[in-house]
Image (cartoon, rainbow, N blue to C red; front, top):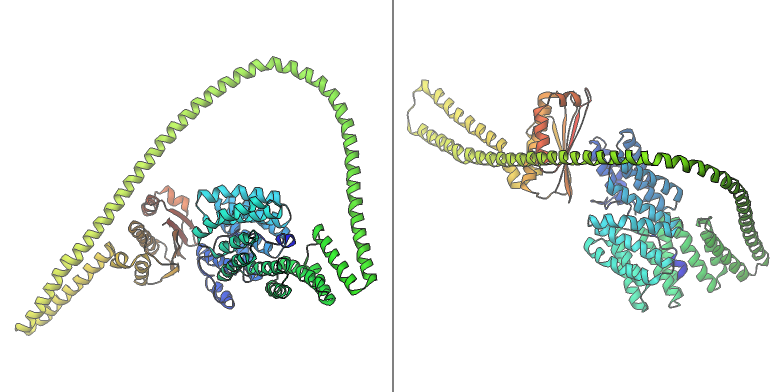
Length: 637
C-alpha cells in the first residue's frame, strides 16, 4: 500500500476553474480561429477557458495553445496574460512529468504576475510550484509553499482552493508517515468541497478518506464516490489514479488478483492514452508485482520493462525497486545470467554512489581544514582591527547619536504632516465620489421620469390626436386643393410621434429596464451602421445602477467614436461571468495621444471615468495616433 501512496499525484489547482467546457475537441481549432479578430482581452478569455477545459482531456493540445497564447501576449507586452499562460504551461508540464520545464514556467509566471500586480495569479502559481516540489520528492518545501498560500485563499473565501490545499498537505503527510495529521486534514477538506461543490475536489477528499477506512467495503464506497466525481469532472488523470488505487487495494487487502488486474489494466489504458508517464511507470510496476506473485514470468518481465522505460531515472528509491523486480523476474524465469547481470549493475551503482559520497566527504574535510587555518589568521588580524575600530567608534558614537535624534525628530514631524495631507485628500475624494454618485442617481431618475412622461403622456396625446383627425377625414368633405395639406399634417403628426419615441428611448431604453444590459446593447448597436456587437459568458440580470452605468458608458464611447475617430468599424463586446462584467469598445479610427487629451481636460472621457469610478469600476484606454482606440471597462457584480 505504501508503494502506491507514494504514487498519488497531488490535486492540480494552479489555474482557475473554466467557466465553460469545450464539448467537441475537434472543433477547438476553428473556435479559436474565430476569436482571433477580437480585442486582446476578450480573445485571451476565450483562449484561457479553452486551455483549462482541455488540460485534463488533451494535455498536449493544452500546452500547444498555451505556447501560442504566451507568444502573442509577449508581443503585446501584456504581463497579466503572460503570467496566466506561463502558469498553464507550468501545470501542463507538471502533468507530463517534465519537472524542469514546470519549475521554469511557474517561476516566470510568478515574476510576471507580480509585475502586473495580479496577486491571485501569483499565489496560484506558487500553489502549482508546491505541487511540483512535491513531485520532485521535496515534501518539506512543498508543505511550506502550501501553507504560505493558504491565508490568501481563506481571506478571499476561495473554498475550492482551501480544500485542495488541505488535501495536498494531507497526501504529503501520509507519504511521510504522519497518518493522524493526514486523516485530520482530509476531514477538514470535506466541508470546503461541499461549499465549492467541485467534483474534482470531492473526488480527492473521498479517495483520501478511503485510505484510512479499515472496513474494506466502506473503503470501496469512498473510492467509488471519488471515481464518480472524477468522471463527472472529466478529470481523466485522477480517474486513472483512483482505478489503480481500487485495484491495488483489492490485491493487497483482499487478495483478489482478478479484480486487481482488471482495475489496473483499465487505469493503465487511460494513462497510456493521455501519456501520463508517471502513472504509466507506477501502474506498470504494480502489474509486474502481481504477475510475479502469480508466477507469470513473461508478463512480469513485460510490465517491469515498461515501468523502467517511463520511470524517473534520478529517483534512486524507484530505481532500486525496479532492480528488485528484475531480479525476481529472472529468478522466476530461471535465467541466472541475467539475474547476475542485474545484481552486478546494482552493486556497481551502489558502489559509485558510495564513492561519490566519500569524495564529497573528503573534499568537505579538506575545505574545512583550509578554512580553519584561514579563520585563525583572520582572527588574529581581527583582534588588532577591532581595537582600532573600537577607539574610533567611541569617538564618533556621541556625534552619530545626536545626528540620529535630530533626523528621527524631523522624520516623525514629516510623517505626521504627510498623514494629515493624505487624510485631507482622502476626505476630498470621498466627498467627490458621493457627489458624483448622487448626481448620477439623480440623472438616471430624471431620465426615467422624462422618458415615461414623454412616452405615456405626450406620446399618447399625439396618438389620440392623430386618430381623431384621421376619423374627421372620413366625416368631412375636404376641398381638393386642401387634401395634400391635410395629408401632410397627418404625416407631420406621425413623424412627431416617432421622434418623441426615439427621444424617450434615448433617455432611458425600455429594453434595458425590461430585459437587461445584453438586450439593450444589442438593440443600440443594431440601430447604428458599422457597429458590431458580441456577447460572451452567462447572461443574467445585475444591479440596476450598474446596468444603467454600463449602458451609458458604451453609448457615450460609441458616440465619441462616431464623432471624432472617422472609424470604419466599431466593435462592442460584453463579457459576463459570476463575479464581473467586462465592456470593450474598439474602433479602427484615427486614435489620439492620451497625454495631449489629458492636458486639454476632455470632458467626455472625464464624465465616463467619473461614472465608472462611482461604481468602483476600472477603465483602461489604449490609443495612439493612427492606430485606433480600445477602451476596456470592468465592473464587479
